[in-house]
Length: 196
Length: 267
Image (cartoon, rainbow over all chains, first blue to last red; front, side, top):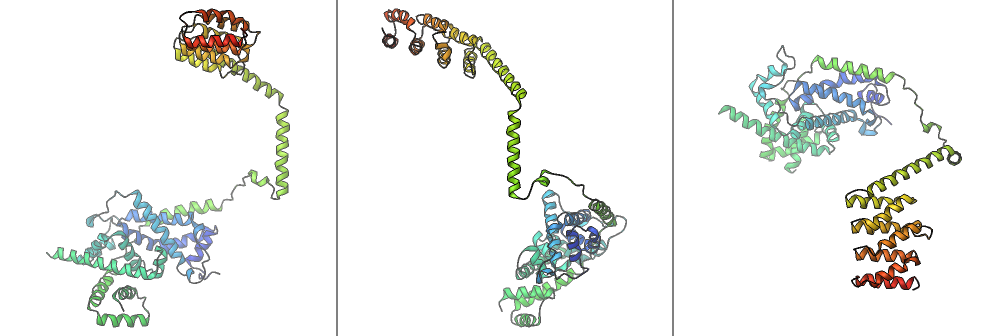
């Protein structure tokens, strides 16, 4: 029995898994921005984030048979998101393995979204406090940064994140609290450094 | 409520995932725990500040790239797959038919194998050629300067199914005249393995070996030769054996072997 609502990305992906790729473009239109932001906040690189988004959609087609089209009961809700973000995390991990010697761009090296005009991020980053917060987020260990990105920026529930990471939602909450505490500590240090 | 549980509830509160009883329980804990209350205030503020961070946007190049990729994939997906035939398509599903097909294949194989005379002839001819080549190699190696190479030649004769007269002659020559004791012993060993050289009809071999007996400077070769003559029941070697046994400086082991041989050959 499927509980996925008609016209959702879950249903579209189920059709793709059956061999009908027609719904793939709609899935892309609905999901490529959140995915891009997820990758951009973790890599701080525009072109890398776009490459990764492209790769995720390719993998979604390539591994469409792994999508469970008919999860039962509560599992149906958010099943598509969990599957998509698992692919996204694997794609990022593969990328990190291949490019482990690359250095992430610094504050002044952040790639622009379009070369001939200031990006919304660049404009906002001029506000000092947000720039510091951005820096603090970048200094956070990768696993903690990922948790904050998934909860705060991607708008996923703890239940969904638990399914993506393969742990209980209570565990995710505890880890998010610790990540936030560490972020606060780094941010506070940076503010003191700036003031002195 | 313990603080660790309160921290989980704080994280849930930031995400607006608290139900009413949880919200009340957290509120109650925060009123009694100063540390948690401070953390809730400061980290909650930070959580809100994160929302002010602008959302980056992907470039239009990504859209163009994706559209191109998708078009290719959809086109490839809609093309009817060409039917490919495999052996599995012809394999029956019924086990009885499977057994019948297997039996039929076996019978066809046996009949076909039995009716290939020209091929058998070809194989026999090929075998002959290989044997001839081996013989040539063995003879060639026996002529080499190096004792090691001559030993290899002797070893090569062991691979011949039938010992041709040329090879027997070469081995006999080696036993009689080769300067290396090892080659002589190996050659004699090779001759011992062939019934041809010991047959009474092959007098030449036995005669040559008997004649070489007194000339041998190695007691080991002499002893081996005596054993060979006894094994071949060569009664015509008795005279030579007597002369050998009469030699005053003969090695005691060889003398004993010669006496034993004379007894064996009826003298």
